[in-house]
Image (cartoon, rainbow, N blue to C red; front, side):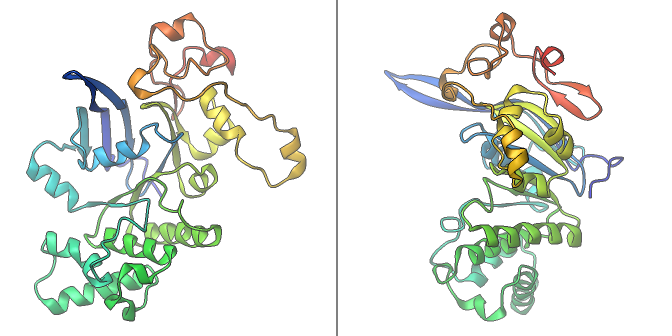
Length: 329
């Protein structure tokens, strides 16, 4: 679990990631995939990041690891700003990623041993071939794979087993911080999802890992996360403790997301009122002025079109970006 008094292991300040889109006739227009996002993750904590498809969740994770070069803002690891190539290399020695799709994130021409051993090769984390092989088998054991699987290829495994291979690869560098990118369990059936989620929790407890867990499935996120952040169209709109955001969501978008979560008790489900948003999510190429959610928000006013609300702390540890948060709650 997280250590409240410790220095954040990863801190993001005003992170921006813009992609220039060719509009023809030598014109480009910036697509603001991530716009002015800030948060901090404590050691041993799991921060869940949720939102609709296309809201910038995955881009946040990849930009933190500098797979995309940030357009603006800062990423700090243990208080040190990541700027130079040497900083990035040092950060990647202690940070890794589990990708969404276990079918496309593994090289079909490499054996399992080579896939898991590749980070060991890149970061030169062994002194002999024997040590390398022992480390690969050790990593496979952590994620429940048998040693005889080492010589097989990725296509010979099921989706759940492939995701375990990806997790073993992420553990190879002895990371402190792992980005679980783009729903690491979304491609798996429900029973296998539960196994993988429980394995994430066990590995966190065993190695003291810190996760940024990116997903759509709000029930999965609540199960594994200490805190949850909600994104909409490149902006962070709410951040709070997992139970707090489920029991007392304050932003209209968070309320609509949580109203869509299925409840197993039919009496409670019938009593709950589903909040259905009108319209489609706008294109990030032509985002609305002011608050990006105003075109779908039932509480929008003139001020919402004029300026983006500040991301402010309305109660202990509960941050919201909404002009009318005091009126609607």
